[in-house]
Image (cartoon, rainbow, N blue to C red; front, side, top):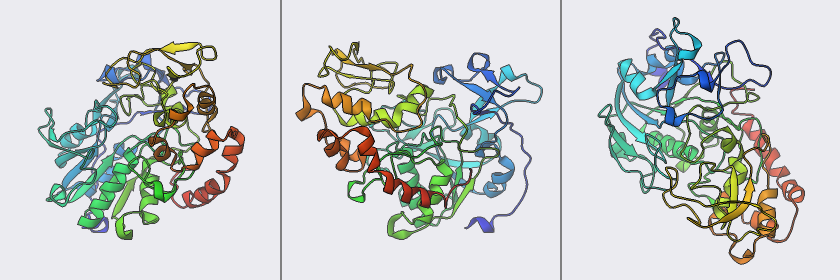
Length: 427
């Protein structure tokens, strides 16, 4: 059944909104600091968060999507970031809380039949690359279907008896962050099954710029499925529209897609997440540096997994300690059971105090390559998948400087930006 067939019954908005973000200018009167916010799960708090009540998330626009769900059997793709921010009209700002979208929709009498969990699992505790198993959510008794490991795409049997599938995941705007790959496979499976998809849109914390090499299709993988740059500058809803519009699904299919857009959002706003989008992105600094530092995942250099400053530091036993005075020893922790260079002293850089960047930086990677004592084993096969091209490794190995490398991306970025404009929902 298509969305045009749904009855336009209006339901009351019974859940209020607080969007977590930071405006580009001075703070509004509604801003509060994280120390003032009471959050149901303090283990997931970020270290730097401010609250502004001016933006309305897609998930909070119940009057828009509840009519589409009435009488429908619903599946939902969700993780720990899939939340309503709630605030009673009688509560002060320091009493802000959130509830999980699954719990909230069940309370609204939405007939959720099953939950699909992407990489890191439904509760967001699994390591990167760790197998996420099917199971039962102990709180709701709903079946959980893993969309990671061998089963990245929902099967026909898993979609059986569903009338609509909701996708509500917080993305961070990097091509190799696998939630957009899960989005692709969900849309593809639903297109083949004739099931509509509703995307609850959320801001992109790296949504104010585009940068990086455009993926070459011979290097497609789960960390890069489409011909886009490393930093794509789109919300999850805009990206869904691009997948559909560019006919990237198998056999050029298009799914019946509805994006529940945000109100009062634009790409120039700086957005701060209150919940870890994954175990190794613990704060705003990590999310901001992630597109640049993630390249180290394809090398023999640690990106900080096994520490509490993941993607804010880097280091290796093979880097020159005379040049890199900062050092650390990765240890198993919640985000990494078996971190690279476990219990070994890694020499590198501490980037926790680096100012916010709005560009993809290569100098840290280039300098590390130039100062390793093991150039022959610096890169591994995963690097090409992350870069989406063999050219970047070749350029670094040849000694090409950052400015010259980035100049070679210009034409591809211009083509992508022209296509991107066709799908933007916000300015």
